[in-house]
Picture (cartoon, rainbow, N blue to C red):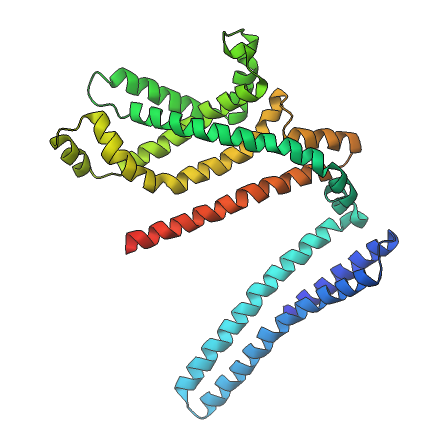
Amino acid sequence: MCALVVLLAWSVLLNLYRILERNHLAGVGVEVLLVLVGLLPLLLLVPVWRGLRNAGQARAALAVKDLITTRVKATEAREWAQYAIGYGAAVLLVFLSVQFLLANDGAVGSTFFRLELIRDSFGLVLGAFWKNVWMFCVAEVLILVWGLVIAVARMIPGRAGQPIRFLATVYTDAFRGLPTIISIYLIALGLPLANVPVVRDWRPEWLAILALTMSYGAYVAEVYRAGLDSIHPSQWSAARSLGLSFSQTLRFVIIPQAVRRIIPPLLNDFIALQKDTALVNVVGVIDGFNQAKIIASNKFNLSAVTTVAILFMIITIPQTRLVDRLLEQEKRRTRG
């Protein structure tokens, strides 16, 4: 398998060199770089050789009935074989991806990764992308407050709170069942069209933030409510027995404990929110994606859209890793 991976990698690099040479992009530096990259797959032969060596040692130990050495060497051989297979599969996927970009005489790669267009349009795309970041930050603060209000409304006790609980439930069900792009379209275009007082004079960016707040507020409210429900009932009972009111119990006892538990799922929602800021282009907001679409339509090339996609990944991937780290810390704290 490793030999096939090496041969495939070399064939892909040879194809890449031919395309670069045809476009007069090949040179000594490029040739040296391709040679160095071509040597990297040969590193897969190291675990293969070590696995074969350990397997031979296991057979030799078995011949002299040294069972302990046989088991140790057989285990090491199996581990090296699995290592070679795993990394061989990874290298195979990487070079198959490169081959996909080189398909149709490099047309696929030039459609998405034309370097001169990425360089020339980067300033425009980055300037518009900051609007996505700004909208995300403002919406995130509003959603945190609004989601907590809805979550508390769904937990108001007694018959007197039943109408409020009902309205909060209807709100969360409606906006969780409604696609975010439809919420943005209806609120950001519908409210000015209906000439609703106050909001009719808002800029499209603020109307889009309102739509995102209403949509994601329903999701975050359920995250809050799950965190509040996870607190043991004895905490409620102890606080109420000390004379604290319902609101005081929430403020001083329940919410501080619940917030610690819901930070990872909240961050997951905000990662999705960051990406969904691209949906505001449907109401004419010139954000990063809309700016990239304008450039793509003028140049008949999608490299600018690739630029904004990379910018979104730069923002969201660190957040994803932070969520994973927080989850691991919570696991260790719970087990400890």
